[in-house]
Image 1 (cartoon, rainbow over the protein chains, first blue to last red):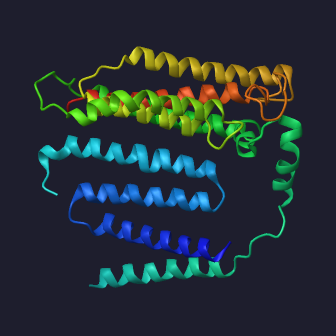
Image 2 (spheres, rainbow over the protein chains, first blue to last red):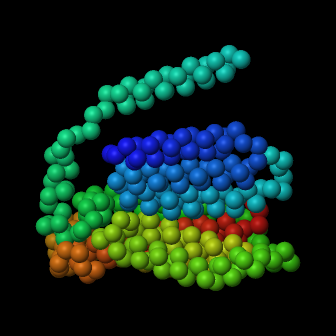
Length: 84
Length: 230
């Protein structure tokens, strides 16, 4: 793995950690959901760097695509009776 | 306070476990026995350019059948739980916006086409039934977002889902009769490596899995969208 690739991987890992922290500690639920989707998106790029495109596609389609929208769906549904 | 301290200790312990794993890890210089078998024999034996697909559909086909069953069970349970809820009553609501409506008209067919492309080409390019099915379901989701009152025929979705499952198992049993074992792909000619119609029954099986997975996700989303509340 070249120097550039290693630096990019490290950067992506840091971005993933930051997004995970935002998802856990963030005040607003929509931003937390988006951050959780971002974790999956970065994970799928990392899978691609690790030469496993099949897993990357699954992660991108299900982890960051469907799950994020499902969370928004449910959030919209439970909005009636909650205050964060 | 003591709770936070225990949580902190646990975190440090887990970090220590992962650190030792990472320090002790050396990448293999060559493929191990199983991996070498798959890497060397897949193209010659099964005619599939994508080794991962060959493993998922043929060598470990029974596991995939199990996975599809698990997904089917969860979709069925979502449907069962939500069936008790009140059906959504049509009522005037704010329009979803020009951008989403127009964008959906353009993008939904393209997204579904991409999903079909991914599962039909599962034996040639990365991806396959599960990924393609999920992409098809995202297209359905976009349609639902653009028009929340849109009604999807549950009968059609269940018909696609059940027929795909039945044909999947039937192809597996045909493999038992005509070729080497359950879900053997060599019931059809293997063809030349890299062609669309090659790798025996793998494109057929993966298309069925893609349809099944897409229908399952779509039915989950449609019942989530069609139920007002529990």
